[in-house]
Every structure is written in structure tokens, then in C-alpha cells.
Length: 355
Ligand code: NCD
Ligand code: ZN
Ligand code: ZN
Ligand code: ZN
Image (cartoon, rainbow, N blue to C red; front, side):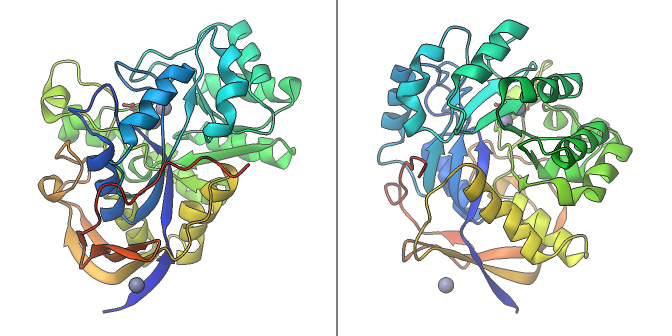
């Protein structure tokens, strides 16, 4: 057995659904899933079905909802909505960034009007992270605005060849752009859809093999691997109109370790994308005396039923992984032992950014 010690990993893109849709996930089940997957810090998205985080009061409700329930540390994003810019100065110090939805996805936060989009980009403090869900032409529109609004941007879940190529070009021209890719967009194509059914429905959707190849080929342009952990129940996913999103917290690290094993990237580069880069981009606080231990040689098969996430399924079902989490220590306390979560709700903290 080869044991490797890594820093506690950070997933800066999760949907823990608490409050508002806790039948899908909640702060306790979601942070348990995080620890099982080797993450000691998450940043939670604002599109809570039923209670989006778009007002100071909704943010206060979310902080309260997490109180006493967290097994790992959690930061929060605020949601951009038409007319909510007046609250930005007040909430900015308490959140890790502002999320702007520019395409249709889970929730009701899509902003359509160019004028509103520009005004939101100008209103959010320039030195605080602004994250966008922007696919295809929408991504190009954002790139076009950036020099005019004089700010940086983080592109969530990049999935297409043209997107990653445009981001490469933007970086080469000196624009302050960062981006993330989700493991499901590195491992599946639209050809997996017949097999996955509703379980393969997500935004951005699964793309062509050429897109997946381009993401791997341009991995040097990818700043962050983020799960976009977006659980929905089996009933919801098996319905005639399955909601968008897949869970990812417990398969992200194993899938990337499997890629390391296959020689597709180095372990150092993986850690850079799953710890150092998210910490730097979102100004996340250090976690003293915190680490993850990995059994790099362990082969195992993914099973949704044995996962900690409340949703009980995964698009990676049945896939063989090489590499598993054996233990996790958070602030000196063992929270995963022999691959089992032994931490308790309340040991994690809500973390405001450090800048
Ligand atoms: C996310 C969700 O369910 O909240 N769904 C998804 O398909 N990715 C929203 C999002 O990240 O776009
Ligand atoms: Zn999104
Ligand atoms: Zn998301
Ligand atoms: Zn240890």
C-alpha cells in the first residue's frame, strides 16, 4: 500500500441545497460527502431552490441553517439578481464571491438583459471574485465585456473546445480570467446519454468527444477542478423532465487520481488545481493541521448506494477507480478513518474569505 499525504482539498463549486431543498442534500449530508471525497473546504452556490441567496436576509438564513451542522468548512457565494446590487457592499466581506447565472439551469437566477449584466459586473467590488455560468456564445459575450468593465472573472464548469480555446486566448492577451472544469465533463460525452438517461442530464450538458479531448489537451489552461456537486433525488432524475445536475463530491478525487495513475497529469498539478488554486482565487483561509491521506494503489468500483450524499446515485456508477481516501484530519481531529467518516456535525466552520 502506498500512502500519500495531501493538503485538505477545496471544492469551490457545490450546491448543498440547504435551506430550501434539503430533501436533495443538506449541510450535514453534503459535508459528510465532502470529507469522504477528501475535501475539507467547500464553497456553496446561491441558487437554492426555494430560497436563493440573493438578499442579506437570505444569506443570514443560510448561515443560520449551517450552524452546528457542518463536518467540514464551508464558504458561501452570493447570487446576482436584477435589482439586488444595493446589498453588495454589505454582503461582500461575508461571502467568497458573487455568482452570476447567464444561461438556463437549476433555479431561477438567470439574468437576461445586457444592461443588467453590465451593471452587476460594475456594482460588485472589483477586488472580489465574480463567477459566471456562461456557456458558448454567452462566454464570448462575457469576454467581450471584461476590458470594458475593467474586472476579472471566473468561468464555472467550462465544457467546450471553443470555450477553453477562447479562455487560453484571453489569458494570453492578459485578461484576468480563471476557469474550472468538472470531472463529469472530462469523463463522459453525449454518447453516454442513452446509458445514463436522466442521470446524465446537467448544465452545461455532456458534449462531443472532441470537446472532452480538448479539455484534456488544454488542461494547462484549467485553473481549478471543481465538482459542481448538484444532487437531485432518484425520483426527480427518473421523471419525464429530469432537473439539471449530478453529484460529484465522492468521485472527483478518485477520478483525478485515476487520471494521475494513467499518466494524464501529475499529482502535483492535481493538488494545484484542487487546493492551491481555489484557495488563491477565492481568498480562502488556511486550515492549520489539516491533511488527507490517499491509498494511491487501491482499486475499487463506484457505488452510489454506499456514498454519503443524500441523493444515493452517481453518474460514475460501476466505474473502476485507482486511488482512494484512507484518512482525513481537520484541525488536528481525525474526521475520516479507514475510509469511513468519523467526524461530527459542528466540527466544520462557516468561513468568510480572508480578503
Ligand atoms: C446546478 C444545480 O442543480 O444547482 N445544475 C447543473 O446542472 N450544473 C446548477 C448549475 O451549476 O448550473
Ligand atoms: Zn452552472
Ligand atoms: Zn453549479
Ligand atoms: Zn495522518
